Length: 249
Image (cartoon, one colour):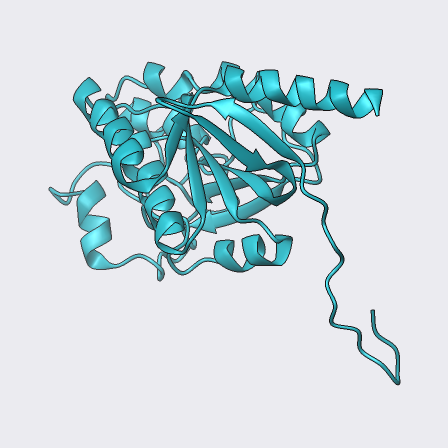
């Protein structure tokens, strides 16, 4: 609150809204009032049959597996006033935010379709911010209240406004979903852990086109070092119970 004579810096008190869910190995209690969900790279170039990965011969079926559970979970999270944050890969059109080494990773031979190059047929430029390529797949409805962050590294925290947004929201617990679980999702989750956030990987809402052992290693490392692994149905069940208890009160 501010006027010409007075600035009140006292933050509004946010009452806790605890829920307890079954994770792998133990029960955990989190505060819905301090929780957000971060969805990484559920966009056309990674998940659509006409996107970049499919064009270069990657089987995108695993990348599409999170769509159904996210479609069920996201409306419930919105109804519980949990912020929905979409973190999508989005390059500058001039690619000045991409280092030579990063360009090399995705075009190692110097030929083919790399970051920012147009796809044959559609002409959509790979992962370019604001393009069809970088857009969220249409099967995942987006609401006006959702928050969008563009990244251009494996981690959604590197050189983005994500951390500032979360701190302004008063969030300290993050649920993670998206693709690839062993790459951008895990790197973002790790960086969140390094910054002091409590992290939950939504196992069935995260997937990878990498070999199965990469997903197994991701789950192991999250459980061992970086947070907790939980399924979306466990979250959903508690959200329903929480809403019912609230109705009774």
